[in-house]
Length: 418
Ligand SMILES: Cc1cc2nc3c(=O)[nH]c(=O)nc-3n(C[C@H](O)[C@H](O)[C@H](O)COP(=O)(O)OP(=O)(O)OC[C@H]3O[C@@H](n4cnc5c(N)ncnc54)[C@H](O)[C@@H]3O)c2cc1C
Image (cartoon, rainbow, N blue to C red; front, side, top):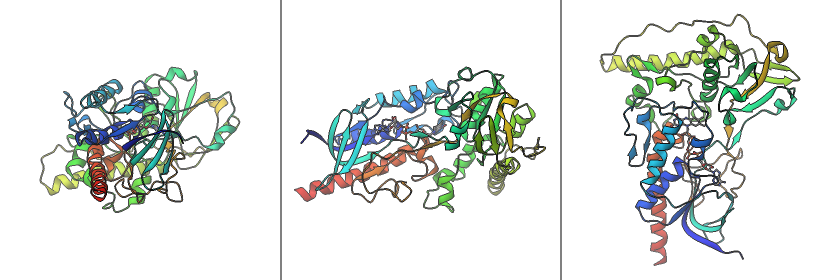
């Protein structure tokens, strides 16, 4: 039998989620290790484009006992500032991390606990925390392989700057946070952009004198738990509201970009040779995004009225552009489209976890990250508990909650043994 090192807790993943749990375990003096496939904070350092900046304001960066203390709490850190902030957090407690160590298998250990196999040796653990983020596999639909190979394809995870793509037009597919920001990045650098607009909602940025996220925080929106949410399935599956933190932050109204020369289409439905097919849903998707935008404005207005707050007024929202018709087919050759940039998201990859903690669709089952399998946990996923669970805002609270569970289990095991 191969030698296995024993740890009370193994944390898989060295991003902000894994290190936040480690911070509290270090405080409690509980032996543990973080196993990280790359170097710590790999996603922030290596999977973002050159002009990347936070969409959430800096004040929402609240890692354990390490809130953002810079000069611009209402600004949006750029990539290097984010990694400096994360590195400075890690320096506060010297986490026990093994880098370049991929966990390849986790199975229940007969008699209790878990067997953890990794590229740098094997472990036994009383408890395991999965903190691997939700962004393992970039999504590209199967029909993408029908596209003429002369048209270059790239996923948003590989995009750094427009110069990576050939001269000519680029079709960006998807209008979540990444899609709209890559559209703006290419458009500002003078590239011809075609954009397939999906069903993502959008948000105001500054409204009635304050950032919409400030209002929403004050209104209690970010304190709502998934258990309290009126439509939890919808909340979990919904794409994020789009806006940007670029150049101090602003809202993204795709109609304005259409007016400025970006070509808009509906959702992509197929590809054959040099032809791309679209659903006739551009008008609906733009209207729905505007409805969510206006809905947030209305909610803020109602809050201001209810609490008699003095705030500047705003002109009513106006649609500055309408599609003349729904375009359902485009010939890339004819339109001069030489590349496709996929920005339709990611899927997590849990194939290496052989523990009974998933539903029929392979989604992890838990209550605030605590699984039915004894001593098995997830952290860092969207709406694990609140909106902020998959972001900087909520990770501290979730890490404290899991640490309390981990300690309670450790103490009850010790008590039973004595
Ligand atoms: C484009 C983009 C923009 C975002 N913008 C914001 C924002 O503005 N504000 C905000 O608050 N949040 C934002 N987020 C969301 C979130 O804060 C980040 O995704 C953050 O990186 C999540 O941290 P994490 O620790 O949960 O996961 P990650 O940072 O992804 O860390 C998980 C780690 O697990 C490792 N790993 C995976 N599998 C294994 C394995 N089998 N063995 C060992 N290690 C493994 C990975 O290498 C990785 O380093 C954004 C996300 C994306 C993708």
